[in-house]
Length: 446
Image 1 (tube, rainbow, N blue to C red):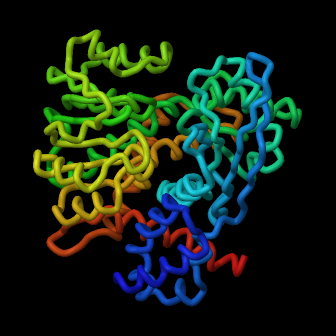
Image 2 (cartoon, rainbow, N blue to C red; image 1 turned 135 degrees about the vertical axis):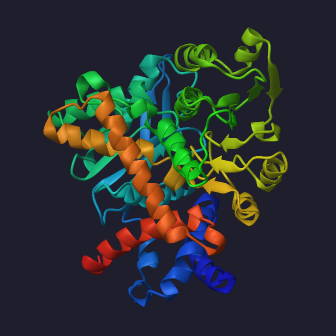
């Protein structure tokens, strides 16, 4: 298999030089898919994987805007429309200084598998800009979003490409983007998801990714006749996904010990309860402060410029950003008794870390399966927009649970190995691939 992967990746590297994140993502998929294709030659004959790694379209554009001092600033905007074999492009927008073409191609490539796993008719895409909303006024963010959408509107629509939020793009940004699209097009359509509930958004959408990753862990634990009650949990991040992962873990009786941001992490040995979590939500969502303030408020330990993987735990949720958990972190987690790692972020574990998880046979849930709850509810928001109707919180939560259960079943179907070990990476990759690949074969060489 190593020879197959190396040969394939050499060609990919020639065509995509210096795109480290994208190459990492393709390599991880290739490790599962190439061997599977040897037993299913129709995919190999029609070069399905080679076509799948090429975006159908990449849009790159300048985004000029005026700051509060009357000065002109220029950012770079993107939209990567990766694959539409099973539905219109679907995937978030990320506003962050780290955004570049490699990052967005990796996210878009991961998105097509994630969307496929949900069972909903959604292709994969991703977009964003190297704009940093942190420290900007509401008016500056509005002016940037309006300029960004003034170009993007030509390439999106409810039956073509439906963006959502991601890092740096929350309810505020979605509102400004939607308002500009509506002003330009003169129509009220479900072109974006993550909208406010009062104007076409879905209940449970803010909670969906965090709740979904916990639901996936519960499905894995059921395979061992176990549950979350009393489990020690560490979480990285303190944004939307981390907050609602913590909320659901607390509700299920787990003990949440850590949360973090880009400056460090807090370790609360007494556990982060609902009251403390409410403080974090206000701190991050309203004050836009630093997690260090939590340590000062509740008298717990704060570790500047460190990640939480050194804290002994049963379950770890890497919920911050890509490649935040490396091979040494993986070894530390395993030696400290961690038996389950579930990714709320996209590709937060390096390849070396993943190999350690697999070789140690712990439960490891890759992001494309575990964090699919967010895009699943985005898909349900699209359905509600088409119906001009809103479902109840309880109905959406039930649908989310069913989708996560089905994703878990697909992973088990394709990922079961000897001694009944479930390789969730292989299972998720193959299950996602087969649906897209069959659609691509049916639609011809396009």
